[in-house]
Length: 211
Image 1 (cartoon, one colour):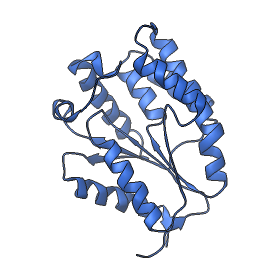
Image 2 (tube, helix red, strand yellow):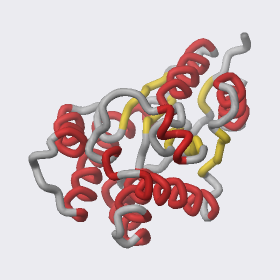
Image 3 (cartoon, one colour):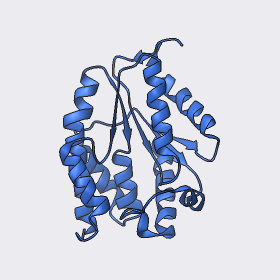
Image 4 (cartoon, helix red, strand yellow):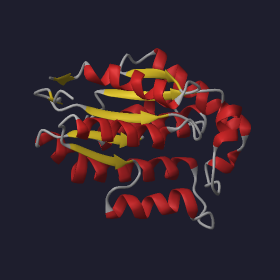
């Protein structure tokens, strides 16, 4: 296999989409492909991947006895992301490493904005402050019918997953709406085979890597 490496501005890839589309599987395959190709990769998850981020993640997804107003929920995600950028993402990119994140600011915009009722443009503005304008080179939006994705979900539902089918349909519509206005969001049909999805992701990513 020929060796790949980051371009002078190290690429930052994120993966997003509604639950059940196969994000975790594709991230695992993508990171493995990059490493096998000779790349130095830093995977992370948002929220998470720092002590602060993991503590906030637990509150956001699992501490259902703690009430969260929509704006408070949004700001907790922003705080976790600010720490993730400062502690993990920015240092990795500065060191010439490739970052692969399970979700990023787009998820906040869609979950708390399109589906949660907060102002979408305001969320983008707050997000740019929280991330110091660090943004993914490409976001892979894994897309499929929300009912089909729901049927594929495994494990115990978290706080967000319990919000029901209408909420998940709003999420999908929100993700697709953002993709239509942002060329850095690549929509990938997640109903394809696992191998086909992985191949499509690699083809898009390769444009941002040197041989």
